[in-house]
Length: 194
Image 1 (cartoon, rainbow, N blue to C red):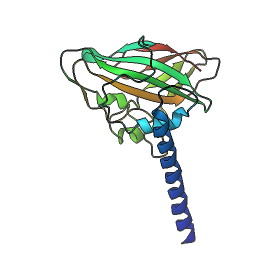
Image 2: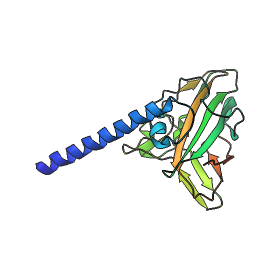
Image 3: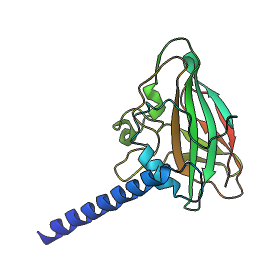
Image 4: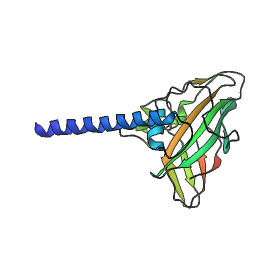
């Protein structure tokens, strides 16, 4: 009996620590000035986003690092790929509907892993390929199996943009270029900063 109570208490403490980390990340997102804030916490809080924000991300360059073309005029413009000291690589960008009609964001973008599929539409199917190190990196997941990407994507109106992010394990420091792959989109090479 006491073992079950201890296990429940530990799970509660882990949940509390994760919630506290998310709260700190949300508070850190308001500055928009980059700095040394912890990307995993800030990015994890963004995974709760419904994807309805139509403004471009603050502090991002107007010229994308790469532009991946999807179907029916859907574009993914990568605006940054930042390595942090915690061993994570956060890729930020915007979905843009260049077509003349509203589009449904394809559910295939979440990939086909059972653990990710159960959490709805996301960018969980994204991968980074490090040709130099001959490795492929998959989107990170939290302790509940949710992908550390923008989730809750549904439709995008003609001309609309939706900010998105994906978080991966960081390749070695001497790797500066990686190829981003996303189901149904063309591949694109991006330069890592940091």
